[in-house]
Image (cartoon, rainbow, N blue to C red):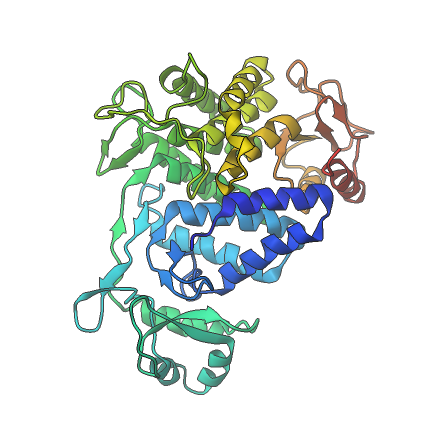
Length: 475
C-alpha cells in the first residue's frame, strides 16, 4: 500500500473549493493513519516506502527521497489550513531526518536508504535497524515503558508469523501521547546499531521534489534555515548534475554525471528553481528554470502530436520513447511539464508558455475521460493552468509588515498559489492582472488575483484572510 499523495492533494483541492466535509475527511483520515502508523518512523523521522498491509502497520523499510518529498509537500499544504500540532511534528521530523541522514557533504540529497542492515547475528536483515521487541522496550525504558506501550504498539515484520514479547516489531502510535523523552532514548540507542546503507546518487527528479517541498515547508512554518538548506541543495544538485555540455543529467555519483535528464527530472528541478525564485526574488533561479524548460522543449516535446516524451531524443540506449501521462508514485512527466509551463506563464508573463501548456494538455487530454487515480497529476496541471491564484505583495521583502502579510498568506492552504513579492514601483509583466496596482497609504499591500480579476487591496492580515478564503472557492 503506497502513500498516494498526488490524488490526496487533488481531493484536498476539491475540499478547499467546495467546502465538502466528505473530501476533508477522506484526506485527513488517510493522512492521520499514515503519519501515526508504521509508515512513519516515529524514532528517527521520515517515511518508509510503503506498507505490505492495509492498516499501515507493516512497512517495507526502504526510505526514498521522492516519497518523503511528496508527503512533506502534502503535509505542509494541509497544515497551513488545519494547524494540527501532530502534523507539524511529522513535518519537522521528516525535515530533520532528511537533513540529518540524507544530506550529502555537498548539500544535495542522496536518493535512498536500504531496507536491510546488519542485525544482532551479523547477517543483513530487512528492518533490523528499525525494530524492537517488547522486552527490549521494557528493559531500556524502565518505569516509562508502561506509558510508552500504551501510546505505541508493535506491528509485525513482513514474513514473520510468530508473536510474543521477544519477537521484533515496528512501532506505530495508538494514542496522542507525545512520549518524546522515551523516543529520544530509543533514538540514542538505535544510533549505536549498524545503519542501513545509503545510495548516494544525486537524482534530478528526487532532488527537485525535495528542494521544492523543503523550501515551501520553510516558508509555511517560518523556518529560514530550511529555506537556506533548500537553496544550498539546489546549488549542489545543479552543479553535480551538469554534464560536460552544460545540460542537466538525470543522476550523478562520485563526480560522474549520467544520461540526460528525463522530462520529469528537468521539470522537477525547474519547479524547484521557480519556488526558490518566488521565495527569495533572486532572478537567477528564474533564468535557470527557463534554460531547463528550453531543454525540455527542444529534446522531449513531440512536435508532431504534442505532449512530452520522458527520454530525450538523443538519450543513449533508449529503444522506445514513452510519453507518460498516468501517474505512478509521483505525477507523470507530462503532468509535471504542463504545470511547469503554466507556472512560467504566470511568473514570466509570456503567452508562449500558456499556449504550449494548453497544446500539451489537449494532446493527452483524452486520458481524462477514464476515471482513474492515475490522472490526478494531469488534473492538477489543468487546474493550475486555468485557476492559479496570483498572490502579489507590494512591499519591502524584509519589512516587518510585509513579513506579517506573508505569514497571513501561509495561514490558508493555496495549492494553486503563485507568490510574487515586489518592491514599490516594480512593473509586473504585460497582461498581469495586478500590473498597475499600487500600495495603499505607503503600507505593504496584497492583491489576490484569479484570471484577469484581483481582490481589493488589503493591508491587514484579517482582511487578507477573508480575501483568500473567498477567492479560492470555486467560481
